[in-house]
Image (cartoon, rainbow, N blue to C red; front, top):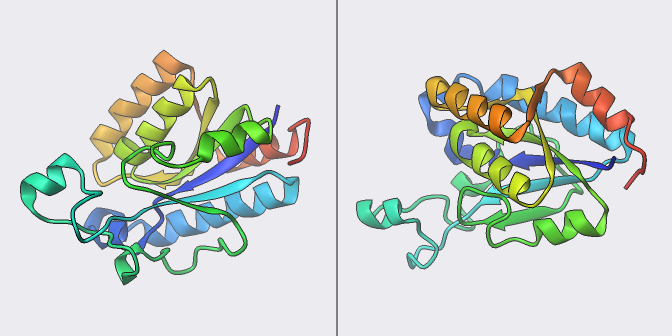
Length: 189
């Protein structure tokens, strides 16, 4: 088993939301712990972020409908949230919810022989969930670092995780179990 950590959308704009803002310190600390555990085990870590262009060419349908974009390349909103310890890790830019959409993430994971991804970041019910569904579609096992994910809507998060965990056999693990997963991988990347 080869395990990689994906840090998803830990950007300032997402934590402007009041619900996520209240969880920022906890989620950043939990992500940093997962990063440290992955680094210690020699597991690959990828930082995935969302960015859009002002010319609307990368906007989603809902952004176009509302005529309102965000997370523009080069803005403070698109920057990593304060305190996140991601220096030295590859950063991949996406324009949709899934970390696999429009990135070379799958090729990178395949090149390293990764068969399991640990997901951390925001928001559980959309970007984390869509990444999980696409990982499953690509025959990757998925683990949620349960203390390192958060959502703007906990009801949606619970519901979507229940479906993904039941239907796709994905798991939510505690910090200690995630650490054990990293340390038990058979090949260090």
